[in-house]
Length: 352
Image (tube, rainbow, N blue to C red):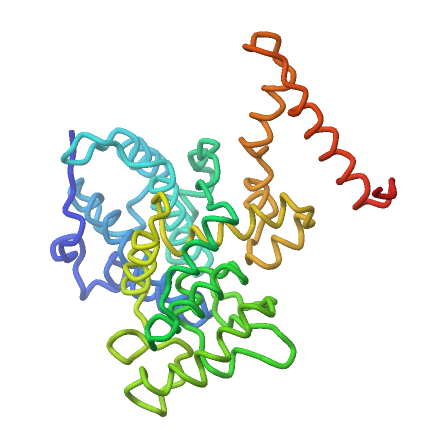
């Protein structure tokens, strides 16, 4: 099964002095992304994944993009599908899709700039991602247990309480939180400005009164103690007294979850994002509102949270399935009361 070096330099894949070679044109493409304000993560992904494609082409004697035909791109797609890692696992569909997306984007730009006569990747069909369930989220009680386990009488504990409250209240991504500056928080209006979200897009999200109260206390009592440079604009100071790195934030949140005694799940910062979205939807929040808060470009991404709660499925199963040990009226009564409560919230019934 073919293998490629994931992090080796391009070296023999292209002549850096060839103005029509992979090396030069890929550098110009990444510069194009930067000029048009694509996120740095997108630029880095394009640089890294296109180098893998260029090396694969070079191994087959193709050292210029103009040498690449549609059949070559199709062969590369089959290569990605059949590729196996050292442990025997295939590349995930998301990984395959990501590598092909950057190849398609590169050749689309090449064709537009007249470096190639036509786009050989134009009609390549991207692999479909299999349907997936959302990450298992916390319950309300579990979130409260994590938050209450922190010693807020210490500067680090107070910071972590404010930080986790912010994640839970806003549902922002890890990279968005580490990029927050002091001026991004509007304590009077109760919102946070995320200036560079995923894909370089900004948005404004609400922050709840409770989270805001903890952030205010952190700013007054803990941040001046933790931050090494008083001129640093970072909202949250890491244990080293500087802005958090994404990896450091992940490690901190994982540790806080573990120390709380709550059953661990896969993930850390994203767990609070999933939990916020799931709990708000269960309580009747509009899907498009959740989409705006989370910063999803497509409503389809947000729809993953509309999967029926397993807790509700279990209650309905217990109340209606004929094969059970005994008929439990309390479950049926609970479902009836739940329906009445939902109707009351919609104005159809007046609660007793």
